[in-house]
Amino acid sequence: MQTLDQILGIRYPIIVAPMFLISNTQMVKAALANGVSAAFPALNYRTDAELRAAMEEIKTASDKPFGVNLIVNKSNPRYKGQLATMLETKPAYIITSLGSPQEVIEKCKPLGIKVFCDVVDLAYAKKVETLGADAVIAVNSRAGGHAGNISPQELIRQLKDNCGLPIISAGGVAFGKDVKQALDWGAAGVSVGTIFIACNEAPISQEYKQAMVDYGEKDIVRTTKLSGSALTVINTPYVQQLGTKANWLEWILNNNKTLKKYAKMIIAFKGMKAVEKAAFSATYKTVWCAGPAIEHVHGIRPMAEIVQTLTKEFEAA
Image (cartoon, rainbow, N blue to C red):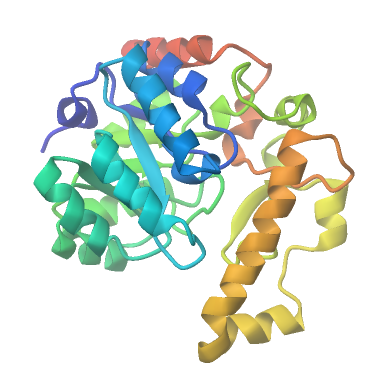
């Protein structure tokens, strides 16, 4: 089976993960210029004009392959419009999250746009394989943001033994040796996010970047209070005050078949607004997303330098 570098025509089998509020064109361009691919969430751009401008900026700067992440469930009211724009602007690949990728796959296939689907278990991987996905992003228990529950090695093993799609392992990569380890386990490549959060180019606040340096793995907790799904965040005093478990009303809403989809939309909207506010300004309501790889972030550095360190380590591993 092909590795990610062969699938995309890049030097290294690495994607810089699409990170809500964090990924921007500067980060993507720096990644492409240094032998890896990168993706950004369509939701990082408020208007269609801004999304199109971002696509054009990257394509003008580089002919290397990059991707766009689409949230494909009802929590994203802009999904239909974003998909239509992607079908026109044609990124190399789309990463689907939090819903069925069927429509994306059906519409992208004829245009040669690859579709990589976030999965957290074998059952979902087999579903997207049946639908015609090009690869799975295997989101494991070491991932930042919406993490899975299965360890990197075990999830790769399950998918490799029972699924025919290339596996892009997401979670737990901080060094080049981690990339090699994932490949040795059977992955085609890796998706890496947390170690890039504290880059100079990221549009987030200096406080958020400094938190990436000051906090460690022991400070990462999961909360269901912000998006309706488990989200990994830094355990700041505000997160401690907020709590990480749904209260009785949230639990009832999330478990009632009729109300569930509306509750998730409301929780996701309110929660992501809180994350957005904290990302860009100093506030006591600090909700900062990160994964366990925060342990290995020791400074705020240029994006290119972080990529080069990772790829050099991978070459030496």
